[in-house]
Image (cartoon, rainbow, N blue to C red):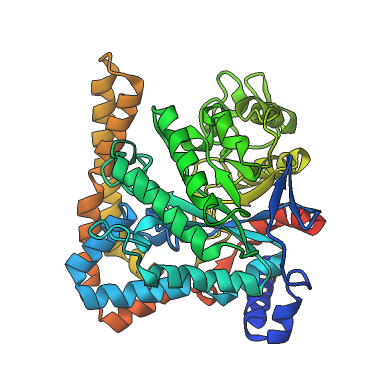
Length: 491
């Protein structure tokens, strides 16, 4: 057995042993039950007067499904809607009940605790808790599902950050915000804002006084041109929460995908228990803020490319310039960042950059949660194995052949739109959105094609496919954990 296989087997065995051994479960995490609610004290997070640094993972893909995580195109509510329409209610229930139970289970939380993480950020879609047809009529099954994992985290002494990542009407034009066609109606209808405030009041009512909850993350990655409305919404949420819960920290994401710290008005910080969350994904044009530097230009790291030096010092300067936090007298959290196996940049290079990135977070005193814990094999530290029923289905010649033709057609149309827009004076943001929507137009037929290939399977077989997401059906990636482990051990 090589080192990678040995480490993977050890991780799996340790997590499964913990999940099935009550004595070992009590040892994992701190020896004492968490009794004090985390508080913001200046730039620090404290528990009963002792400084705490939160270091953890995002549990994306569970109560917030994304296409690359599940292997089905489009946004979550359309995936679920079409699944039920094409395959019927019985098959829908069999698959998604099994998925919900398998994706995050005791073995997953035990593994995270064994590894040394002390917090999880739990993104969720509002549709798990209320229907658009009956707003305010709370769906108890959704709260039951949420609480199941909260209780597992309590058992293994892991704090939980609750993150509303898809709000009514969609707060951003991304599919992970619940936007199916690029719509962002959240900012156009007061009813959507009021419903979101009411949802947070209900969540806070249920978890008031619970020390395992670290914070309420009001709105994941908002994008709007109406900054006063964003701040008005945040203030409304803070006031509603404080009427039922005066203790828990409230995590605020700045505008523009949690990047524009200046968008947060000073009035928000009149509450002493506010923390700010940023999403410093370093990938993209202008890497490290140097003119001409691009993500794809780095084959190794550190390196000098076209006279520009790419190293920890340059990365630190970019983080300082893009995320100016010196004026904030509250804790800061890098609540999302990560690496992508699907990107052309060598994965080892990405990991080397991420190591420096996390070390900078630590140096600044920031808490952090990496995106994401589990997926099919793009960003996750845990990924579904190729020999599982779901992966075998997705990797079958019929599906992969269709996806290849799909990508070729998509690229052709995307290039055509790009050429058309290049000779116009259309606003840059509208150009980008148009190009995105052309790409998104391919999702409905692609989803329909894949779902129809599932029609031959029984509900029991579909449930078995969904069970492919269980921890015991996954592989652990030690190379990613090796980057994070020194910081976890230090903690």
